[in-house]
Amino acid sequence: MVQFSIKKFTELNIKELHDAFALRSEVFVVEQNCIYQDIDGKDTVSYHVLGKKEDTLVAYARILEKGVAYIDFVAIGRIVVSKDYREAQLGHHLVRFCTDQIHALFPSQRIKISAQAHLESFYNQHGFEKTGDTYLEDGIPHIAMIKQ
Image (cartoon, helix red, strand yellow):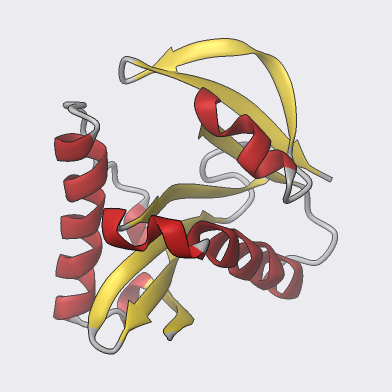
């Protein structure tokens, strides 16, 4: 069973930080063949959501307070699930955990994500709605989505 937790950057231990960067790189850089600057200076001011099975990080996301990624929205970013765990609907559990944490930490704040366009229906299931046109982010089609 996967256990979720949330930590500020200063609460992460070195292994957790390493594992988060490794999982993000494994999926976003290697699997999706996308060369981009993953470490963008926002990790130090983010909340980090860790989904672990025993001691292995299998899911991850970061939550950014209003004003960090978007002026008027709290954001969820770097949403990722290890390839071996995608069939177990772990992505749904990860997004629900993130939105629950946001409601607890930042009551009544709207949430915005920059979603890969092919995942629009996945995020629709969690109450996110597309706003605007599709755009390229690091060479991959994305859409802005908001949850009221």
